[in-house]
Length: 315
Image (cartoon, rainbow, N blue to C red; front, side, top):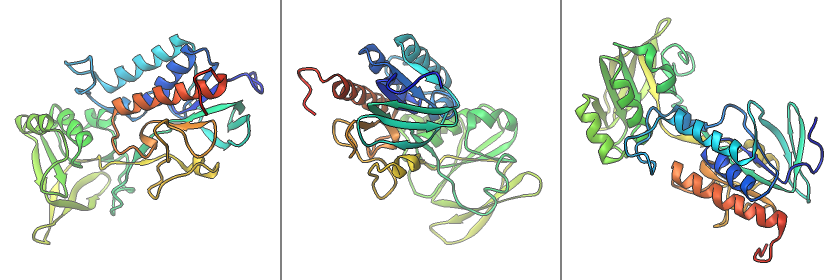
């Protein structure tokens, strides 16, 4: 490895909005800052067709463009970003925190964990069998393959609504399945879905995904009547929430809650001195780009205080 022991002041694990923001603030404060990202910068934000509630973009902006702008800003600030380099294990006690990847071992006195989340599975028969053959977790990635077809979107939050709106411009029919009687999505998105002809199948759950070589339909359970029915569909887009990517943190001794999210205080500190966490992987109940950015700011400022010990910093 070219970068040896002590060459970094701050290592950030994860290149989503929280991690890239922390990289901007860390580098601008003078810390030698490294961002390690297992995939490509942007996180799940990059999969969003359009983001309409991010301040400064009243006309909306695609997730991929927003992620690209954040990455450019982070690099321009002076942080180094290493893509496709996931952290495999960490030793976080003591002054020098050590993080191992397939390319070598990095060390720094301070670490920010911003690993984010991954898509939650439905856990129904046919989901794994038809993954990549009609089952998708990314409408932006796979939607164009379903032009002029009938698709089911599963979920009731903003993510599912945004997927349904994106797909409504491609296929002939979009059906949104949600297990409750009302959607969690913002009212503006719900109204836009209605205007775009999205069909709501409420109080229903997907119990099975069926097909042959490709998806051909889904079996729905009616929560009101207890009856089963089958709906024809060429594709199923699943957007039922996320689970935290915190396994490596747990192995390193970072405290998690009962759902696997990293426990932090109001200053984004974990239970290990010099180790912070930011964004969707934390216990903050509001998983939004704006909150992730705020976490990244706080974590980087705290990391600077921990490393440089200015007069105002108090452990």
